Length: 205
Ligand code: B12
Ligand code: SF4
Picture 1: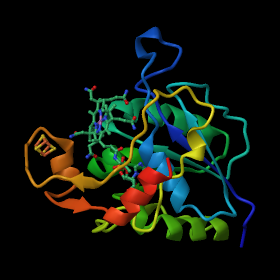
Picture 2: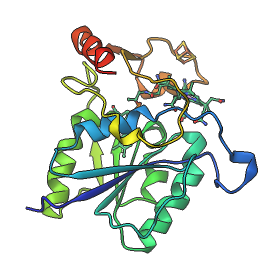
Picture 3: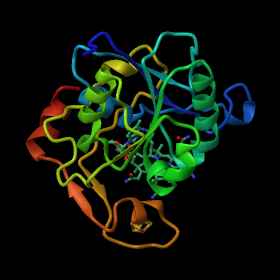
């Protein structure tokens, strides 16, 4: 079992950073990556790079690169993934767009996680340690999001985010507006976190 693992988390920009059209001067902390970091066992080193704010250091050692993909960042996510895979680094993709179009994401990833990571992230880590990463992790909906998991915010340190922080209390939606990705992703369900844990997270800020 390998416990000397390095995972890089990536929040892609809408497009190439160097293209002025895509410069984002109002970036907020990527909450989903703070959740993934918090789900990761402590013996694994986790670093995060935000493509909106900094260059991606493709030559830095990584055992796994995990990319969060929304539809508006999918094209750029695939560029980043392709570059890592050319260098022999394994890429995992997850997030809203991966659940909507898993087959498209699979063309650019060694592994995809479909749905909320709370269900299968630890299983994926154990597979990574053994060198048996699966091509697909299909997650069950989490009835209580982030149970026992306080967002890890140390991964945001030193990056130029807006002076505002985020946390989630609930996720999902019961409605079914046909143009809305949330109506598909959450399958018309709404979930809430444990209130005591939300209060603990607010107090820990
Ligand atoms: C907060 C939010 C914002 C904030 C972002 C703050 C920030 N952190 O940067 C603001 C208000 C700025 C924003 C802006 C926009 N947003 Co927005 N936003 C949301 C919202 C409400 C919550 C997202 C969130 O943080 N959830 C909490 C985290 C913990 O959950 P999560 O992201 O779902 O992650 C979980 C899983 O998806 C999975 N997962 C996620 N990533 C990964 C990666 C890996 C490797 C794995 C394994 C798993 C995994 O595990 C996580 C834990 O369970 C969602 C709607 C929703 N309810 O989901 C829309 C949503 C993501 N936004 C959307 C859009 C379109 C936008 C804009 C493009 C709107 C616009 N036209 O300007 C902009 C883009 C701004 C930008 N440049 O990034 C759409 C995306 C649709 C799609 N098909 O991708 C959504 C889904 C809204 C909708 N109803 O359709 N947004
Ligand atoms: S389905 Fe989407 S647009 Fe409709 S109410 Fe829910 S979140 Fe809003």
